[in-house]
Amino acid sequence: MFSGSTWESIMGYSRLVKYGQQIFISGTTSIDEKGKVVGAGDAYLQTKNIIQIIEKSLKKTNANLTNIVRTRMYVTNIQEWESIGKAHAEYFKDIQPASTMVEVKSLMRPELLVEIEADAIL
Figure (cartoon, rainbow, N blue to C red):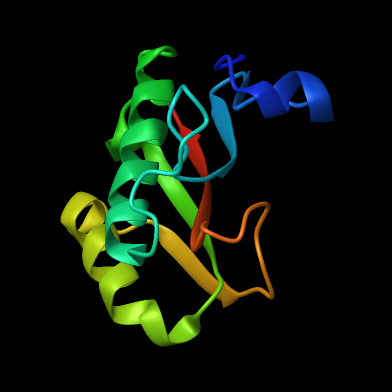
């Protein structure tokens, strides 16, 4: 399922793929529809915005955050784990999907601090 992101046509991917009862959500960053980074310099705000983007994508398949069984968080500074974890918990505290947080050297743009991918089951 295409979200309309510029990157989808450039890189040949979809924001979300539904295969039977499984839903796979590609790595998502905090970029709005106009290509602007939301929450530049703030890992907490970026994480919240990313989860909202994921939630919006899920709704197109009649799913929601409660269907998520795994999240993978790629962060440029592992020292920000508490603020990223706090934002993640605001959405997933009661769902408690399997989750991984890994520090990476960088993301597609220097302002991006967090990228999240997720798997869901209907």
